[in-house]
Image (cartoon, rainbow, N blue to C red; front, side, top):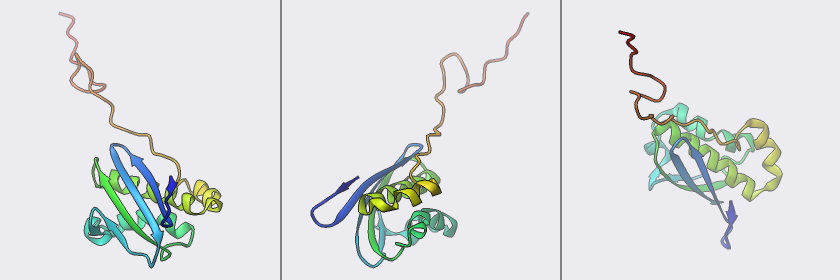
Length: 133
């Protein structure tokens, strides 16, 4: 979470293996993700609503131009990472919003990840069938 000289607020959001680097500047509400508009990158309306929740909670939906770079994970993980990054960038822009965003659970990083496969087993938890005889 950093503030640059040009009134740009930078934050990183993560979920599962997805990482979103978010740059927010004062503007009219344009959103670019990996060079595409939010409608092109996330065609699902429910996902776009999920991403914009921290902006709606703080009444700053049209106040900032957002540029994000996302990599890793799938669409759901990337949406969660972007939402987390937006919330952290909003706190960098205005520390008074911390309580509102924390109450809504937007600043909490979702730690759930896929468990690794262990050696000598077919999966993370599953064991090979045991035969007594």
